Amino acid sequence: MLTTDTSQSVDDAKSDADTPRHVAVIMDGNGRWASKRSLPRTSGHQQGVKTVRNVVRWAGELGIDYLTLFSFSSENWRRPAQEVDFLMGLLKRFIRQDLAELHEAGVRVRIIGRRDDLDRDLLRLLEDSEALTRDNANLNLVVAFNYGSRNEIVRAVQSVAEAIDRGDVRREDITEELLASHMDTFGIPDPDLIVRTSGEQRLSNFLLWQCAYSEFVFVDECWPDFGRESLERAIEQYRKRDRRFGRVAGQTGT
Image (cartoon, rainbow, N blue to C red):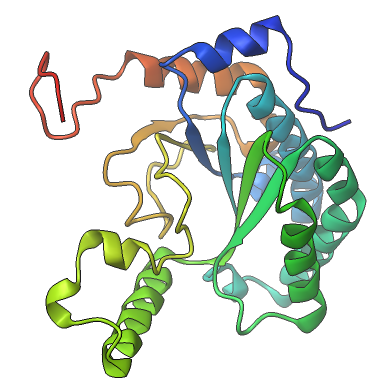
């Protein structure tokens, strides 16, 4: 059961200034989890969906405002067609089965990634999930689907170029803030913490623009084995970091 019900411990977590407001997760290792158990890769993906449900619940309980999950990259289309078809079916089933519970729990769903080349039925499901949950405020669940950060940046630059051609923007008006306003993540704060599972230590074309000052935690567990303690340990590592944003230690102000 998905829930983001509050309690005293959750209130304490939300009042903790050291709790990351935005946690982003690269969910890696489903296939390796299955291979270690002599199971088909599809079994790993099925188990990974169960972990998604749990992490959404834990994020709400721990006072995280934004949770971004890297569910399917623009490069994942290169995988075997059978596996891609299974993943698409799994996503559709997740939306149809879990959206009502997410909505009831006050979760707002947002989708980032390229949409112009998606299957019409899948696109409609994604758009419906955003529309249904638009006014929810307990937790922002950001799903990176058909997402690649380089492509996102290219599309943002193209959008700015079109605005220049229309005369809406002058070249000298281009700033970091203007470009960010054309990103898929406009209105979403940059991630404070990025977690990657399965022991790999790379971003794999994920939130390259947005992670300029993010903290990174790499954990050895494959995604299906990622538990609440794993998430809490990652947050504890985050709390121990000295985030200076270009300033020196002990410096105050902006």
